[in-house]
Image (tube, rainbow, N blue to C red; front, side, top):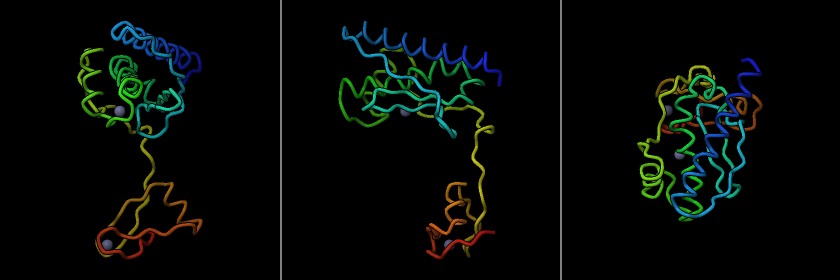
Length: 164
Ligand SMILES: [Zn+2]
Ligand SMILES: [Zn+2]
């Protein structure tokens, strides 16, 4: 990825967050604080919100390939988590309050999943075996097994999983 284009994308996302904050501030006649915006979200997750810290994290890999969707949906989605927390406190992450904010403040369908191609960020899986059949473990779990810090059991039969 070219550094230049990533910087532009990050600028676009920041501006979009600011725009959403402005729209919500007008809507509620309350000045919401611009959150801290970071680009360190990893894995298959497009973005996430740290409610207490008023912070948003976006996935730089997914962001670059899906900028339109980030601007139209992912940014308002995450901003709505912060708004819901400020307005209503601890509520269900994608509950009634959040859905209403998405629909009424930003005119977006309150979707909780995304349909981006995650093949670039899909974590490597490792196959383990028990009598029930093969089970996939994440690289994080696999490393724990290798380092002998943790063993994992099959949820169905309870037997210890053995690396294939
Ligand atoms: Zn969410
Ligand atoms: Zn089993």
